[in-house]
Length: 421
Ligand code: LLP
Image (cartoon, rainbow, N blue to C red; front, side):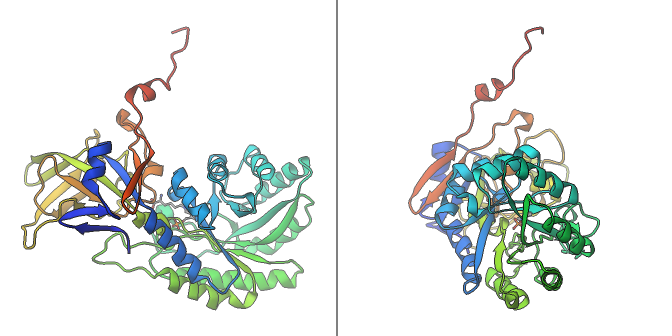
């Protein structure tokens, strides 16, 4: 459920008519609902009620400061994967002991910043990284809390570019090597091992791969305890999918996911962390765009929008499907028409949808891409010198610009011409 509904024939974001925002900020823009973000965080938090847990929002999905401030205020933890994300977490008010640091390529500088600023744990992804973190922590006279991310060799059955839990993927330590690596980590004075981490991929629409991975983690936790390690914490990653095609898909709910976690891992008595990103932010956001032209091509019609692949990359990058709806509610029984929905960028990859059934469109109409709150704005670029589009947050009947559209001058003035040119 989200808070983007038609009311009086017009799409609303909570209690704000979408055209009112368009009139104020121009198109295209991203619009997020505070109520939906809050609701989705709470669904996870409640799904794990009764177990010691922390829901660590994976900010890579949407790292706007306003979104982060909202999450921090709800009591969320946060998962970061770069020095920049760490700085965003601190700026938004997350205390260090609610920040977990993931990622295969943490640098010494990133490790130092997180150790000095406060950190709940580093999720280690390799042996070389383990030795570097040990050195960095010792050089600061500190001890770094760590989990070791294991690669359980499980097929997440998702898009190949976002599957992470197969042996062939770059992530984690092969689960067969885990006992040796934990033994090595425990012997390093700059590290304190606190648990195990696993993340098998994103946009999973079935609980079964999670279950397989978590069973392997449970077995490993027992073996590690028998080896004398304290395994107090399990970080189970993110990955629960959302219904991009509302009409045809119904992925498992956070409540089912939480019940499965308790069933598979409850006996171990560990503190549970999860790192959801997409399910919290995805359906909490829309991308609103205006139709610039409708062009009748050879055997097909193109709806040319003012949004493009640089604003929402997912269709071009993963062939991803996003529902597209008109902002003015189509009347009952209105004819449908097929469009290729495209942006103005100069490449054929700038196609959002092919032969999509939509109500008839005309220049000047507003349309909304649904499920655009996660991996939308964060993956945008200024390709074709198209300014990053504004982000808006709505709460009840209020809306605020949470990132303005830069001017052309601001973009151009970031470049500098060498004196010798
Ligand atoms: N934890 C780790 C270690 C991750 O690598 C990720 C996502 C998450 C948590 C959050 O996963 P989520 O709950 O959002 O599925 N750009 C792609 C998605 C990339 C996901 C990368 N890692 C897309 O647009 O589909």
